[in-house]
Length: 325
Image 1 (cartoon, rainbow, N blue to C red):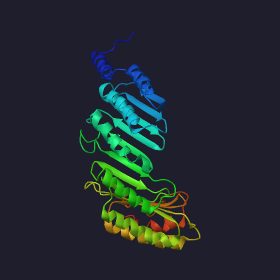
Image 2: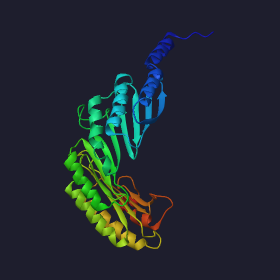
Image 3: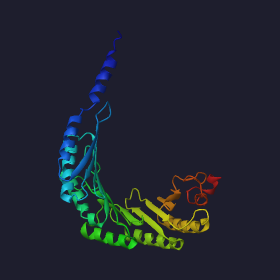
């Protein structure tokens, strides 16, 4: 029999002590409690018990009736987040709740936000349910506005038949009913993908003006959906632009597509050195340019195409002619 040295025994004891308690029984109790809530159709629980140097993880996916009310949704969020904080506070914890076209995601890990603050945030954004499909993300782990105001990241997708004008109407309604605060990030999209976003807050007048200009530039090519999002975070002032053209062919209309894309890039570059531009045709990516990561020698999408080849220039990729040679 081989005896372990004192150092090995000590290390083994420390490593064993580092593993947190198994809370699988408590996780199962939470699953049962959620199942008993009104309007809940189904619950899927995933629990990973802690191991050495790695904490536990609990995930709940909750499906509710399409007709579930905001009060019923709030109750489920309350029950789950209470347990996340009280029982699973030192474990990674995620809730995904689906009710009709709406999805609510809540994350917790050694969280700062109170249950009341998280529930209130979800209920506040749910006031827009009748405008379209909502995706709401609230993090108690990293609250956007502090423990009493966790904030949220939200996507509102408007119903079929909606267009850019409906996006503007929805933005006005958000500002009137909820307000423009730095604790909430917004993306509002029409059914075809056109839209605009702000992070944090609602999009600024400058973002809306750029969105309109990029749309006008692409209009001669037929149906177009343009999405623009500006980050107002001074540490990461990133501009995201997505363009989807429906009525062109990347091989036969190469020249016309390039003229539009180059004009777009001129406007995007004027505004910000941190930007990303994605061009799609009928939903298929044609080029993806991020000046900090793209290179003239490497394709940004597969399979290669003439538009992508032409746009990956030293200028667009932020490298000098000398370094590109």
